[in-house]
Image (spheres, rainbow, N blue to C red):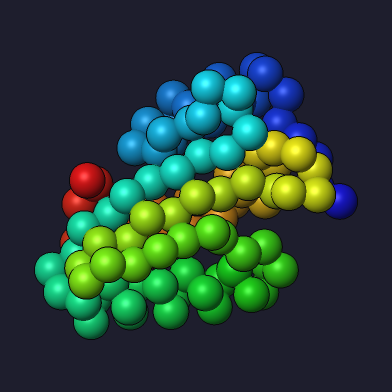
Length: 103
């Protein structure tokens, strides 16, 4: 089981990852990204999938053409954990490398 982030850690994360939205109850975080094409969006998803599989922590996400919506939470812990924080940072790095913009 992963460690839930405490209130202080969540507040720090909200500042550090200000491109992410956090649910009012801080149980999940989400981000919507726009890519130049469907192929770029799919490439992004494949790169994130490889990282997520290695972490054994998988996002809830959807794709419509060149947009990807990502939701992160750790269900068995009941909220945002260190795994969500780490995966969000990987997501941001990959999205930046592929030239994605926030929606």
